[in-house]
Image (cartoon, rainbow, N blue to C red; front, top):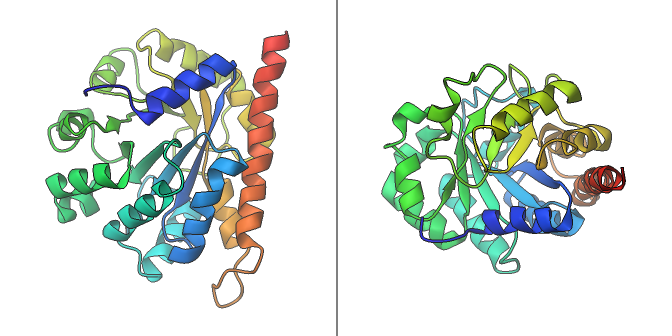
Length: 282
């Protein structure tokens, strides 16, 4: 990579402020393109420091029921990978600072064409990728080309990633490391703060990259606990649940859906900021 990225700059700014960050996950096109774009545009103002934008896929095997359902709603509304990139372009028209990471699976990118995808993603303003079904052994498929295109490539580490495996996982990682705090799928359980703290400490022995913790974080209190040891907390299922809970019987968004989702983000952001300030005062 040729220089610093928005992700690098955002985590540097968070360190300078002495606080942890909030990474929010939403699915592109859920429940429809217009509503999803309104949510996306509102996330920074609500308190999101980094945005993960889910690329809808028909078989999201690492995701729990809530995120799976959001992907199905988005696909049913007509969302495509090209439309995801259009959403990022529309967001960038008004925000050139907030990092956006596309998260999903390799199949849609493979079908789109890796070279074309990377070129268009970079032009749209994408900053990084998280592809959950491509292990480090397949780095030549996407990771190395993405790095060459100046996109951060974020790898997942889990409770079962041991010290022998970690150097393999982290060799070409950039931006930040996503620590999956539980074994299993998204949105189904929550990790103990003490366990996460020990895991983050172990990760820091292997990398200088920021560590973001996700899976199972649903409340401001849980997010606050995570950033007492990690650099950021990742919240997704709580937000896609807020979308689902504000649809009418025909699956259309109720009038206050966007405000409700952004309100959840605001509560999470206040929790994260308060936690780091408390830690600094101790």
